[in-house]
Image (cartoon, rainbow, N blue to C red; front, top):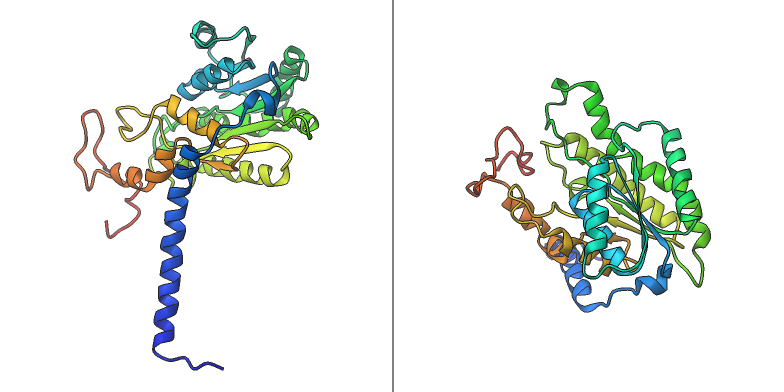
Length: 316
């Protein structure tokens, strides 16, 4: 048996450190390399031209870009959200884009925030199937809401807290529950189905000023990944993207770039970070948001009251 000399502990520590650093670098570099060198999957050939794409949360920034992209690829769209005026605007803008095809675009008004009963989603799924005639090939679970009340949930009305929790969990679960079996049936050698679940990188590195959002996204992350492992015949993509560019998130990228990155990963990966910049620079972006190190930019609040994601580390 080899003796435990002075060099062995050092080698062990070196090996552990090398593995830790190497795994982190691989995790950051791999998405950047693959998204820039790998070709996109031909969506029409893989999922079927003229089939239907169902998008929840269709009126937010990412929902609009999803609609625009899939319409330009020749897919029919069924857009689901709670505001009829915004849905109508998304539909008109999608059909008016230069790359628009002759595809159908239908809208369904459904209150994703107040519908906290599974029977509501069963009825919604029945309406969707009636419109699409069971021709849905892709489901995009995109509904979400960042905590409007911040960390002080004890000062908010119960129905407001329940609404934020509902929109960040129920749509993904029950849309998958009621549309998933049909998606699974059509997946075979000659046709595939896909489910794109929009979670967030905050599911892994939660932020203290959004407790409901972070915790519900962590739930969705686990749900989506397990769904993918249990249903390998369906292209289940868990998207852990960073926030879209805005004055509050100056280090983000545009919604169009995020959707482009997702489409490069769809059908080829189980997990996507959206655009490769988010994958490669996500640790820097989180660090950059910490105003303990950096002065606030115009329109961006300073880091106070533990709102910085790094405030949990006491030595910082």
